[in-house]
Length: 272
Image 1: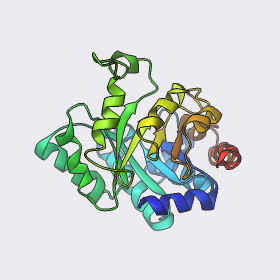
Image 2: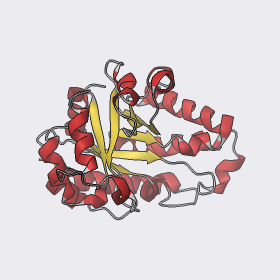
Image 3: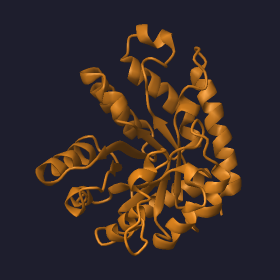
């Protein structure tokens, strides 16, 4: 999915919501565990069918699939195939946080962007250009670089300043512009970073930002939009637990839909 297609869908649906598919077998409704389908896929399918009208993207966190071995990988592949067949206009993000070099990086890119056919993959930039560029060799696909995350430990490295006063996350933003552009690169910026979005927009004024931390992590959607929204929206705001686990009964999908709809309505009022 290219940039113009993504912008069109955001405008059409009046939403920039991304639903994170962080599916945990310990948290899904118990009745799914005894059903005929892979319970991870059964849960994802119900969540997707309930929330698709209100979001523009889905983001499976691969750790929640890898931890279950073959069962998890099968569920991930089933989920992507289901989305491609029934909801082809949704943007699909592999939240993989890959970060290696050489053949390893090329194989990660091949697996996630070609074999599994995600639209985008999250990548850690710590090892530099040759850990990122293999993911940029796929037409119509995106790299989402970790820039300024919402966890407490982000200040350990991301806010470190060099002798000139440039913080590490700012150097990541600037340097990465030599590798890609607004049509191929997005950045992860945590919702809890508040006014830091202003600093980020000075460096990448038109790039899309993937913003986790809304909902269970307490980030403010209004603040994110005040400091981070662009003329083309420029935001994909992710919510995971607040939607997935809004209810643990057989009515879980309906509860998820209500939470997604609530965010979509709020987003519609905030779009420029």
